[in-house]
Image (cartoon, rainbow, N blue to C red; front, side):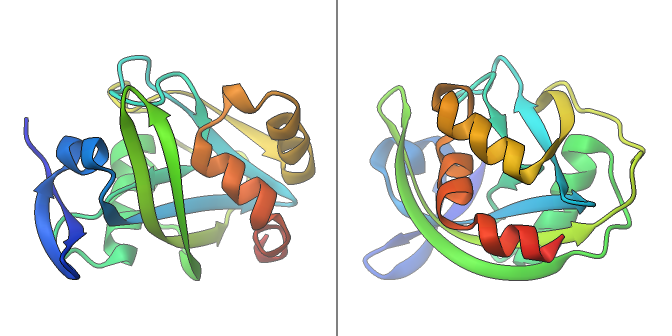
Amino acid sequence: MTQLIPAWIDGQLTPVDKLDVHLRGLKHPAISVFLLSGGKTLIQQRAAHKYHTPNLWANTVCTHPFFDEPSLTCAARRLDEELGITGCDLTFGQTVEYRADVGGGMVEHEVVDIFTARVAEPLSHALNPDEVQAVRWVDLKVLAAEVQATPEAFTPWLRVYMRDHLTWISAAG
């Protein structure tokens, strides 16, 4: 099934097939969410059949908005679709850009709107097995140490967030 996402081509946002965006390494909008509770964040392990970075641990949600979909709408939609989580008071944190090889000749070149929400544990959820195989709560400092010790177990974008943005993510919690 083809999914069109926005990507910049010649300075203009254009709908492009998601796989093509990654194969061509086109710069494109994305969103990331960190659900936070008392110094911890909820992370997800990507499904084994994902076309890139399968089985790797990522932040709570990371995805691409549909063309003309507002970032906040996308963040709330994907929390529900991937994890069955609704009703979070998402707060925009910042926009970051990164470029990373994600394997298989694919590149993520993303301009990411990052959202956080404070939630209480335990948090009711229902994993979508097409997207997620596991979740766990982890202290942010412990997560940063795990990412540094075993980077191959984590998505490239989570490595970037822990390396470059840990301070403000921690402050949001």
